[in-house]
Image 1 (tube, rainbow, N blue to C red):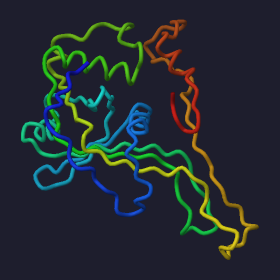
Image 2 (cartoon, one colour):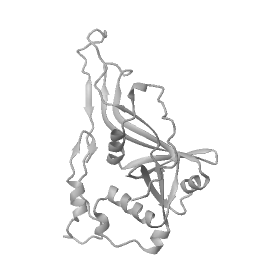
Image 3 (tube, one colour):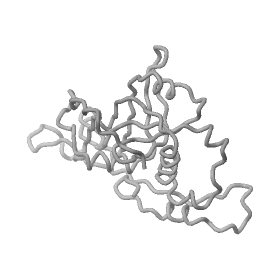
Image 4 (cartoon, rainbow, N blue to C red):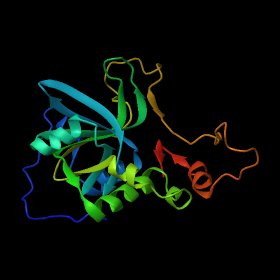
Length: 230
């Protein structure tokens, strides 16, 4: 696991202006979101142009871990120049059908992390790569060959501390009241979104009859519940 430096003070919490009642500072809710989703979006201004890239990530304690190629460009440049980036993660939990399109909505959990990317070096980088692997494909590292020196040299790990975070959620039914003047014979409610892994599809060069590895079996038998992959 990476080493956490607690020397720098945490910034003042950011405040959401629109629908401020949906903001939460619950760290357990934040960690659940980050530990459930697999993809986030990294945003940074590069040469005056906004750049947003989707990427896999993992949470390691009070840090987010991301990785990329040593020739990857903008993320490494942002880290070396100490520029602030934003990393967004969103989970859609359902669609809210109201009696007007204006009042219809979504149930969701979203978080945006702000900060400066820090390179992870040495043994900590090896541990961070393993943490990323175990988050995305638990158990797979024990089933495949070790990375070569060339592969390790071509890969960089960056981390983003979870100090400056804003999280917003909605988990409710359709907005309605007995005296709202709407036609209540029109259906209103929530359609939850659930996800599940599909059946494994072997590659064309995998010999017929090759057993499905334990990591894949474990992943594809994971239950989806209310849109969350556990």
